[in-house]
Image (cartoon, rainbow over all chains, first blue to last red; front, side, top):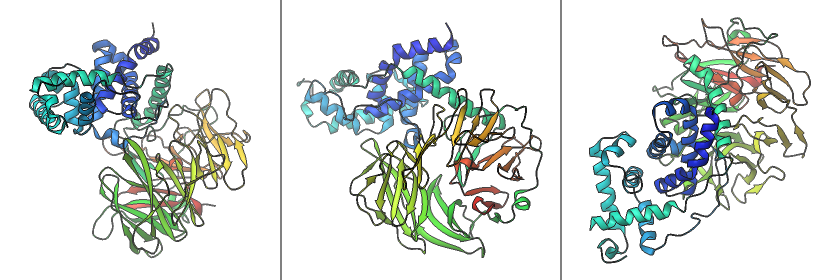
Length: 166
Length: 401
């Protein structure tokens, strides 16, 4: 199979998972699509090299995380390939507590949010997060602790974090 | 306590991820097409190790070859009919009526960027607070060398003034901000004679990113990167779409067209044209196998299937080959483009397809092989400006007959 058909198979199989990751990373459907599109463009450019010595999916996820915390996104000039529904969110979260937490996540600085997402969505260790973001383990720990304490204090229902409410 | 928050985070992020948008089935085909265009456009830069591309008067920094689709040049292979350009005389010798050299720094030592012409003898300059972030604009009289501040510009962090246009005694420009994750464009103006900045109040928020502005009488016309041409009174008021111009971009008022300059998948730029004042339309002829075709008001240029470069009229007639190593960002004013000179000595010439004359821009690579690259076709169609030693070279293409 040639490189392009292997790339097409990879995109067909993994694009939705990458969009889900981009969505929790950024909290916004447009940003999710933007991050996925740019990361896949860069993956295509590096495809033969990446397949030789790396896992294309972890490579793409690493690019997405780094793009998200970089200044690149604020000077964006590319357009999306596809039209997204105009609503902010196509559905809702199952409980009010989760909706509150999702809102509180929006208040976090990008780096803190990225660390939280890599820890609790990607289930990475702090050492792995440090590698993905290209920062020290100490930086990961401090972003995580600042992010968690900010989430705890900004949640409107204190009982929700106290272990008694669901 | 924190354990519960962590558990909730896992649940919330997991549930939220299910609300993400889905990928279209055509995604991989789009990615591959766009990736190929980026690669082609990056080739010349990698070879030349260029660090900055000057788009007419505006410097575009290249941060990693190929990541900024507007800032790189496709390459052209030798054509049997085209010949490599010899080193011509300097631009000031070839076109003395159009070329001026001015000091590269303001009195006091500040750097500036030329942004356009205020009138036949006055240049609009911009100074920067930080990279690409304007903090003031000035009028520079090319005859007397006198400089006059027009106004200070203040923009929030991450917001940049761009798209300067002149008319009705005013300088107008835009800023693009992101509100609730979506781009919103605002317009501003200041009197050419100097004075305060005023916002051009629009009755509704302009959603999208402004790409080009034009002042037409007492009206501001603008187009969006996302497509669409609109007008608003310079004094503020209702934003009205230009009929028949949905998806269009301003080329040179009253000409608007589609697709615009931004063609990430190698589409023909400005293949469709509409005269916003008369309603006249034009569709440029493009043959199968042709690539990087960029059209202006009267001409198109691009490469043929054998990778040789051509230009011709929009109707497909009067086709001629372009010199080897021609830039493929289109013709400024439908007649000018830059051509890379043989290396050594390297550098670029400005070439006029109408008279066949060419002039050496005087740029040479440094010891590391780096040089700036000038793209006449990416500018406003009139100003070509670039730093050279302690001076700025200013070329007014409108003065070349």
